[in-house]
Every structure is written in structure tokens, then in C-alpha cells.
Image 1 (cartoon, rainbow, N blue to C red):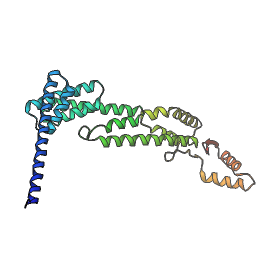
Image 2 (cartoon, rainbow, N blue to C red):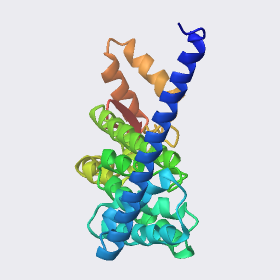
Image 3 (cartoon, rainbow, N blue to C red):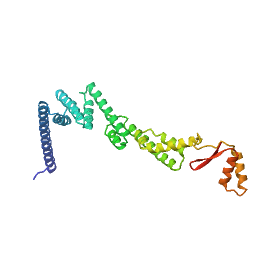
Image 4 (tube, rainbow, N blue to C red):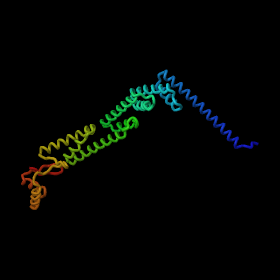
Length: 277
């Protein structure tokens, strides 16, 4: 009978653990050997996709030798360019970013990354100007913080400008419906987004036509709220309106008569009328 069962059990566990570690090391070593061979073969065959895949996997298992690191950098550089040419822009950006983050980066790599990011940003802005806000935002969101440090700020500024133009368009339509033409004129002319300005063109034409008609009638705009102003003495106008109202005239007829007596004419201006000479 074994007098030391615990010790025996411990030795058995240690033997099992040592076996597992040995097997694991053997597997890892074998996998490293396969990846090394794949990397060399991909270089010979100019298979840049396999080169990047095997090189990056190998780098996660052990430090690359200098020649291997240079081979990986070469493959990343060529493959990222291939991706960009074929329109796989985000793949190209991500791959080139990994190259720029490595010791094998050269100045030209950083310049190329900056140029591609600029082109992606310009493309997003182009979609935005065409009225495709969601597409523009999606393009910018794909960029990493390293690729575009001001990404979130840029996206927010695009959204703010879009929402402002949308609100101005709705405001101009509402003011048009209320026939508050000068205020509508101000709102529609504050639109500064190409897509919203094109969308509002029929509305703008209608508003401009209405304000031109008011101008021909001699109706000026009020600099504060866009409403037309009387140019007869208001105190005298009010006194005469009250006087005629006491003579059994309704308020409108009293207003017209009082305006006429002061040498003015009643000019319709949207929902209100004014007395002008």
C-alpha cells in the first residue's frame, strides 16, 4: 500500500502538465515552421495576400526576423495599393495603417496614408453635398482614430449643418403658407447646402415673386421682423378709425376711410394690411 498517495497524485499531475506543455510547444513550433515556409513561398510566388496573412500570424507567435519583417512590409505596401486600385478602399487604409505603425514604415508610407484619407474624406463630403448624408457619415465612420483624428467632429459638423438647412426649409414653407413673405425670403436665402438649395428652388422662386410684387406695391420690409410698415401717422389713423367706428361703420370700413382721409391707400400684405401714402 502506497504510504504517500497525495505525493503520488501530485507527481502524476505534474507529469500530465509537462506532457501538455510539451505537446503545445510542439504544435506551436510546427505551426511556426509552416507559417515560415508559407511566408517564403508566398514571396517567391508573389502571392501578397498569403504573404500578409502568414506574416501577420507568424508575428503574433514570435518576433519576426529582420528579413521576414521587411518581406511583410513589402507585401503590405503592394497589397494595400492593389486594394485601393480595385476600390477596396477601407481594406487598403487599414493595411497601410498597420504598415505605418510598424518599424519598417518609410516616410512615403505615411504620405500615402494621408493622401488616401484625404481622398476618402473628400468622397464623403461629395456624397454629403449630393444630399446623401447617411453615405457620407458611413464613409467617415469607417476611418480609424489614427487615420482621421477629427472624424467625430467632422461628422457632427455635417449633421448640424444638414439639420439647420432642413429646419430652414421647413420654416420657409411654413412662412410661405402664412404669407409672411419677407420672413420666408430671409429663411430660404439662409440655405447654404447645395442639395437643400436645389430642393427649395421652386419655393424660393415663389417667395421671390411675392416679394417683388410687394415691392411694386410700395410695401417695404421691417428690418426687425420682416413685416411691412405704415407710413401715415399712426396716432391720427387710430383716432379716425375710432371716430368712424362710432358712426356705425364696421372696423374695416372705418380703417379704409381713415386711411383715405390721410392720403393713403390700403395695401394687402399677407395676413395683414397697411396704410401707405
